[in-house]
Image 1 (spheres, rainbow, N blue to C red):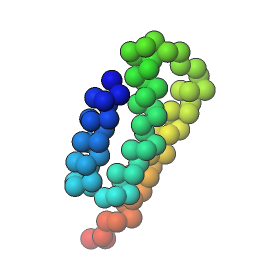
Image 2: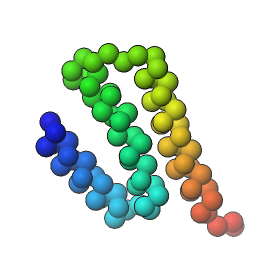
Image 3: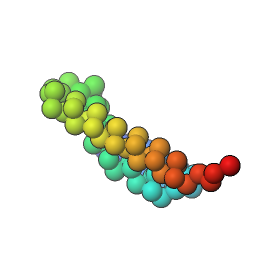
Length: 78
C-alpha cells in the first residue's frame, strides 16, 4: 500500500505541477493527512473521533478558501 500510494501520489503531483500553479499544488500537503485518515477508517476500520472530523472540515475549508481566493485575485477585471 505504501509503494502504490507513493507511486500514485508522486504521479499526481507531477501532473499537477504541469497543469496548475505552484501555490495551488502546494495545498496537497494539507489534504494528504485527511485522505490518510479517511483511508485508515475505510480500510483498517480505525476510529474517527469528533475532533478528527472537525479538524478535517477546517482543513478542507481552508484549502477551498485558499484555492478560490487565489483564483479571484488573479483574474483581471473586464
